[in-house]
Length: 308
Image (cartoon, rainbow, N blue to C red):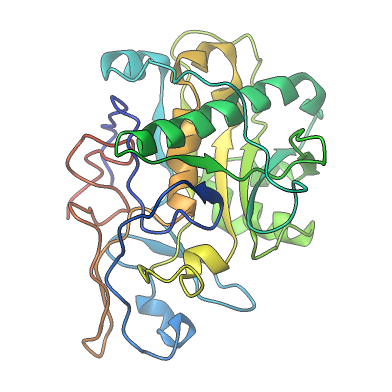
């Protein structure tokens, strides 16, 4: 079981595949090339995910998606104690092209009861801008610039879709078994989209106190530096976050939960994967854990998540 210790003190991000849905302002460091093993689809399913990660789903084309399971729920009190209450300044999202071409992060709202998208839309736009600011602030620490390529309309307004799901698909524990299959059935299967999904848990927007916000994301075991070959760039993915992360009580978090989970879906943090035949498929990121995080504690992706 993964420990619930998380640290949000800085906005730095660790990932080997941030090109698919981000616009780069400078060159990034390359990862070790993957071996010529005939493609990830040739890897036995029993060994397709490194460390403590497990298979989420097997797409019709492409490799299995992996996940470490739900991240520990984070409360406002947790964040205040861990120095994570600072919100990055944000001027809104960036606009690129016609808003739909190329790889994009698409925002979804999944609900099983009352459709509250109209009342939550502005808060979603705020979180999206905060997520963008977190990525850009991280890049600027090393003299770069990065922004999220959101799916928008021609006027640069976020395209946020509501998707009705069953009540059994709402819990975070149903992410892989029910939520992802139902999203796929609704048509959200594009290989050029990373889907960031807020799931309506039926909680009042005025909730206060120590309510917890949970999230989970998918990734592919692939550290190939060529963005045209890395599965984290060429395949889709899913990020699920509680609607509670949108509520006023979580405003001090400033999109950090969403940014953490989205960074998983963009490819972080790569672990070491050795195939049954002894082939090293991925060497893993520096300081990686067995569950898709890192250990140096100076990054939004780093916390003690369990043994290994």
